[in-house]
Length: 451
Ligand code: HEM
Image: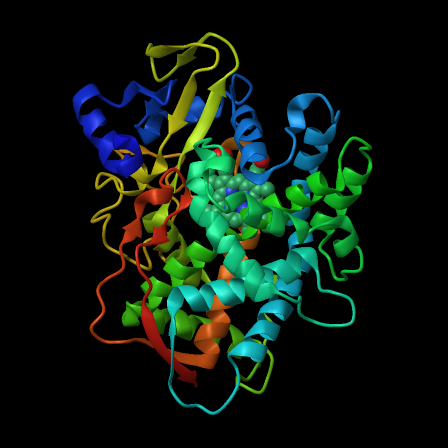
């Protein structure tokens, strides 16, 4: 319970008392925490003995409502699912980025780029959620036949938020039957992806098309199971991205000096390409243009550093001795968990000077991305781990950072944005500690108007 209330504080106190490697019995499981980031590579390289998917294949089916992939009922499916991740990266990212650009522009134009240039008020989370949720949905799953927007998007989003509130309890394996109306809400969300409902959708991403085709190959897979898999993908694609977008925007609008530099950088990229900005004209950034936005990228990475609290969980596949540096090793038993908690690294003053402070250009040095960070005089191989580590590192990470860049670029080009006066600074809500990007404890009011 102590861990659940304040994981970061709990681990820091234990590190103080027991050193940088210690084992805790949490909810019946022995969990060994490796707290020194210089030791992370020793854990990450043991991918066979320390497996991520054993844990995720126990927890994800209970959370999202599909049968375990490793149950033996679906031979070959796990490998195919892993292979589908390539469709989120490399050259495939070009199509996704282009499609996301169009969808963001579309949602901005429908709901925000309207009316005169008077000031309007809005809350930051509400703004990020409504735009990013719909644009990401359209990009991955496509649009309905004969119309550009899905019916019931607002209800879908509201149901998603209700489900997401229960997400930490589901991951903690609390039976869904004990969580009030959560089962009914999850059934409704899953139903949105019923194969018959999805079949007329167009502009669907290659990633979702390939997965839908894969599920069709298994007679033992019911339609509701296929739909539940798609629902899990929806969670993976927006569950962290929306709060990450919130923090990226929040820190920029509360740091006018950072916002000015980032806005100038975005204008500069468009000017070089001879593109004029006015709110009647649609804007599209190429992937190369997005890649060149160094200050924007650094500001996003800095907000990820401050808001991410994902725990890297690995299950030992056999009894073995985990070699750490030098002669040091620790005994791990089959079924035990070895865990990294990168938030401790992100907030380590020995690595990041004044770690509580938002420094938008922390990841830039001499006009280039800064990649050398040190602890105790040694260069760190891993210094920012918002997206996990090793071969199970989030496959959507490039897409996620690109879409946040696209969202912020459009926002800053089209609008003046200011925080309303008299508001308390936003703090992190710890209830999702260990599970990804933390939500804000409260929302923030801004005013915005067309530039
Ligand atoms: C897995 C973070 C956005 C798809 C993960 C993991 C983390 C993570 C921490 C677990 C990795 C591990 O423990 O090694 C994030 C964050 C995001 C984000 C912080 C946004 C800021 C996305 C997006 C997509 C996506 C946009 C899809 C379009 C996935 C998938 C997995 C995953 C499919 C499971 C990988 C596997 O089973 O091997 N993500 N993610 N994520 N993410 Fe993301």
